[in-house]
Image (cartoon, rainbow, N blue to C red; front, side, top):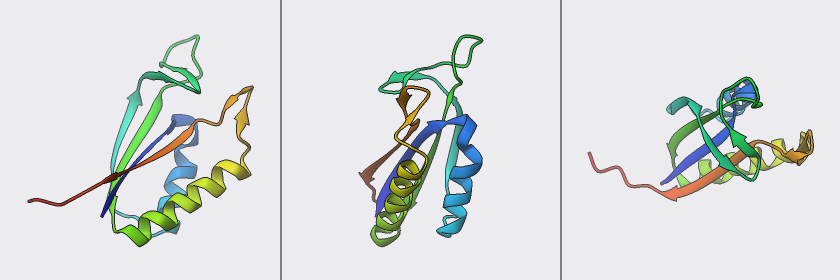
Length: 101
């Protein structure tokens, strides 16, 4: 099993939900107003910033994780690697996951 951590600008949340639905991912946790700093620049919800990030965590079986990672890769490539001079604000991380309770 894999835990996918999907981090993205809140402005594309509808696209992320559509991809999850398309791949029958119905169980996930969603955290809004995630602030930080990375290759896409600062992510702080303020007047001077493009907006906060959102993070979705979902635990899925390995084949589903691979399909979903491929879908997010295609989505990122389709929408361009750069948005307004910055790297497109979407990152997916895969972590080993074991259900213990």
